[in-house]
Length: 331
Image (cartoon, rainbow, N blue to C red; front, side, top):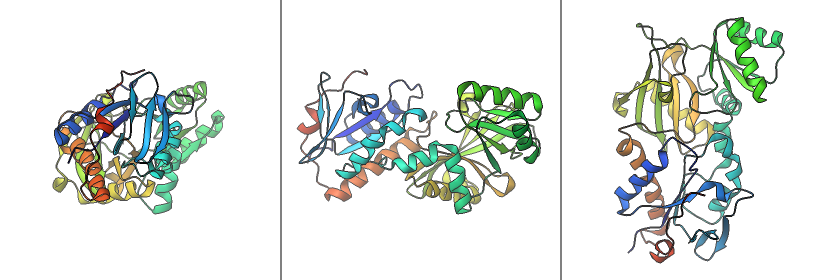
């Protein structure tokens, strides 16, 4: 029996480094690296082709020596603004039985577009802070929204990443700066009541909980010394790793419920324990920090391998389907 053919499809313009960690996890679990594929080539207008094959779905990239029928596709590290363009590929992967945890474009959209996330959380009774959606509001409308939320809120774009374009709003001046920022970029935005998630020492804090198939596999607390700065590690927050048994049960329950609400098999849920437990965001492809190769990336890849084993009863496809195609350089 040979190892399954695994294609790792990612966007090489991303600087998060998740694809490298996942490739390492694949190597650890299978003894060989995955075939690396540039996701930009498999969107409408790209040169890549996904075509039906007797063995499944064949990925072809003319001129790059990529021609393979993967048993498993790991689709990860796709910037939020580029995810919707991959929906046709996701649907084809599902239609032709390729094993992947990323075959639900509707779930991706529900988590990526934050106003849809809020709608899902509200629908399913999952705790979150009161949130208003604003689209090119006049100053008076934005001011009224802030007043409704108690004069202390966080603004964020409907589609964003890493805490970029996120502002703590506490008065007219900060509200005007945020509104002008979003107006310049032509993006809708959300205003959410502040959760008061500040420690007794004055630091902002929140939790990132990784959920895989309804179970928490890892968690961390983010400590941000500046309470007006988003609590993201890329914004300077310090991560403190937490083993699942040591996580507050309220956060475990809330993270699992939020992941199910948007329809994802895997997610990184940002939430706070204050206000009885509230969800801020459900991340489709949460970034990894040091120490999460074995706690997050390996379980995530193992879930793909387990799904492949269940589908094929443990039988692998012949190696040449994968081994005959060298890894392409990013285009």
